[in-house]
Length: 81
Image (cartoon, rainbow, N blue to C red; front, side, top):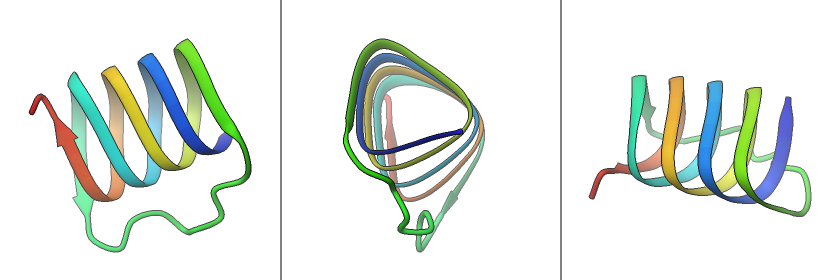
């Protein structure tokens, strides 16, 4: 499990993502659930890496070039726009 306030990465891989906002240039996502988004307990700090991989990610904001996830639960999701 990974908790971060903000994640900036080239690629993000996760089974489930809980976030307020997810933005990616492209990706492959099984299901997107929009609405309230996340639980609000984002944790602290910022993660900047070429690749981030975790079973579950909690983040206030995720910005990536590519994202792969089975599920994203977020208030706002923009992929490929």
